[in-house]
Image (tube, rainbow, N blue to C red):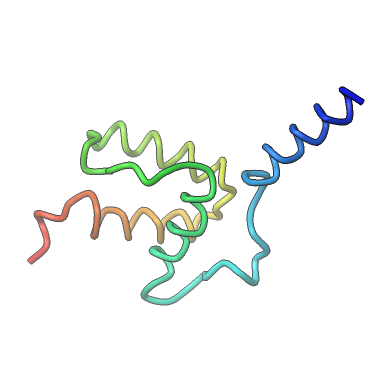
Length: 95
């Protein structure tokens, strides 16, 4: 019985962060795709961190790591990075 509880617990923990959503559910293009991907993928496993509190070097390291972990393709990772840079990291640079 214990092994069944342990197996169920492991499955439930992994289910929330086990991989990408089906491709049809992930926006691949459009002006809002970066924000949608950010909300859909990043919040799946953790809270939203304030990217403005990290140095450029630290943030790039986290972006590379999390893009791999959340299985974003190159275009998706770029869309998320662009959204974050334009709207969250460098808010003070907006015209």
